[in-house]
Image (tube, rainbow, N blue to C red):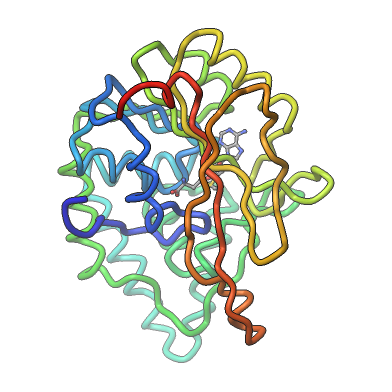
Length: 289
Ligand SMILES: C[S@@+](CC[C@H](N)C(=O)[O-])C[C@H]1O[C@@H](n2cnc3c(N)ncnc32)[C@H](O)[C@@H]1O
C-alpha cells in the first residue's frame, strides 16, 4: 500500500485499517469496483490509491452519506468551506459547544441533509456511529470531549480523496441488491453489510438491516452470473462469535483477518484480539491474484 490512506470521516465499521489485508485478496487489476455497502468508502479509496481500477460504483442506502462523499470527490473545496462555517459556529457557544451539535442535528432532521451538515454530525457524534430512531430521525449524541476534525486537518484528506476518485466514481443510494443486479463479469464486488444482530433483528446501528437468507440468494445470483466478489461478514473475539456464517454451498474461501485488540475487552481489562471473516468467491479464489 502506498503510504497512509487519506480519510476524513470517522465511520463506525470503517474498513480503513483492514484495507491492506482485504486488498491482499483482490486481483491486481480489474474492470470496476462495485461497493454496494460503501459507508465511508474506505475500500474504494484504498483501491484507487493502488490504481487497481479506474472505475468505481459507490452505493449506500444512506443517501445523505453518499451525497457527502460525492461532494467531497467532485467539489472538495466547497465541502471544506461549508464545513468550516458550521464547525466554527460551535466556538461561539463557549463551554456550551455541545449544544451546537443538537442545533445542527435538528437542522438535519428538519430536512437539511446537505453534505457539510452530514459531515459535521459524523465528525462530532459518538464513535462516528450513525444512529437513527424508529421515527427515522438522526438521534446519536455528541462526543462532548471533542470538537470534530478541524478544517485544517480535513482539507488535505478531502483533497487527497478527491484526487484519487475524481471522474472515476458513480454514486448511488439504492438497496444493495439493485446494485448487485447492475454488476457485470469483470467487476469486483466488495460487500461489507451491517453486522447482524443476534436472532437476526434489524440492526439499529445502521438505517437498514439486511436479511440473511435474502443476502445469500443474491450472492448465489452473482455466482451464476460469474461475477467475482469479496464479503466481510462474521467475526470472532475470544470464544465469542458474532454474525451468522455464510453457507458452505457458496464454496467461498474464508479467511480470518486480524482486526487488532478488542477495545471492548480492553475496557474490561482483558486482552483479546478480534478477527473478522473475509469470504472470497470461489471463482475469484481460483484465479491467480
Ligand atoms: C459496515 S458499514 C460499511 C463500512 C464501509 N466498508 C467503510 O469502510 O466505511 C455497512 C453500510 O451498509 C449500509 N447499508 C445498510 N443496509 C443497506 C442496504 N440494504 N443497502 C445498501 N446499503 C446498506 C449502511 O448504511 C452502512 O453504511
